Length: 438
Image (tube, rainbow, N blue to C red):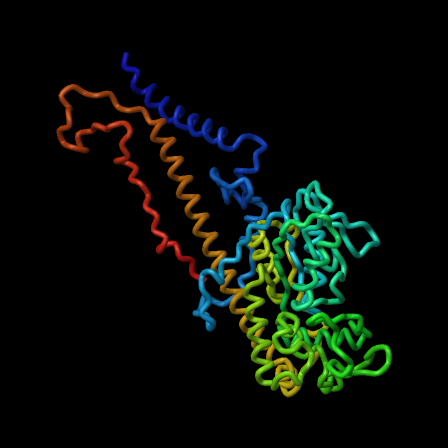
């Protein structure tokens, strides 16, 4: 009796069983290395070769990044790949420290809270109810990995700038902690559209904020009263009108982002008589741009989800909850005439140039990182398909050799050599064809 039909039925069953056994070996029950997500009846994100460090919830969340940037255009500033690649090997268990430079009214309070309350950590920050500061220690150590308002407090002064922090942080960290190993300091900050930031600061000062306890340390001393006069008499500037706010020539709100990111020692600190105004402005802007570019990370208030994405990819850390974009702010509710807007832009002309540079670089970095990640995902999928093909090939029974068939007819003769890949040619890696369009 011919048993060939039963063998033909058995072959696909054995092949399916072999693939299932292989899948169970790579993706055991309870493992997070392979993840199925259904959308209707579709399967998405199935990965046999996923990295165990990648959280699949993050992967799906990343697919929802807002598409609020234009198609990729040539940059005005000729950034190199080195400028765009911002991944750092942050070692939380070692001696690395993240230093948050908090510029007023840039969304820094919200971002600072994310740092202490919203990051997935082996040892989460200890935030007690009713206390403003959290304890952010390294796993198994009494040492802090974060220098910020909500972790170490204003240890270098209220809203300390780049000049203050770079001179103060190493000293403060050595005083707080006994170890003297060389630390790596990774500076981060947030920037905001200059007009919106200026209006927000005006509203904040109008409600009574002063920041008059800020030290403004530079070259070892604070500025004198003559170097940094105040704009008001009394305890605060409550009730100030926008016109009054704009008319004070000593207002630190003017070009605040450039001043707080530049090395002020290059221009004689707050001594305006050390050089002419044009030269001073050029040095300040160039210094701020350079320091910003060389920071480990910076985000933009107007791009919350992209800010979250870039921080996560830079430091290989993941946030628990997604950032929220809030566009209804006090600044957004101010009804500005065109002349007033132009006046604010003139008062903040250095910040306007810095923000244009920062936005260009930020979006270029996002596109660069996103494109590279897409290429890596495609490569993994190719490897998965190749692995599945190999499993099917190994599970396929080989036809019995027939007498006299030999090698006649070449490949058409029906003979297959086990171990060859004639039916499954090696996939070539054509990276040029994988360029993502943004």
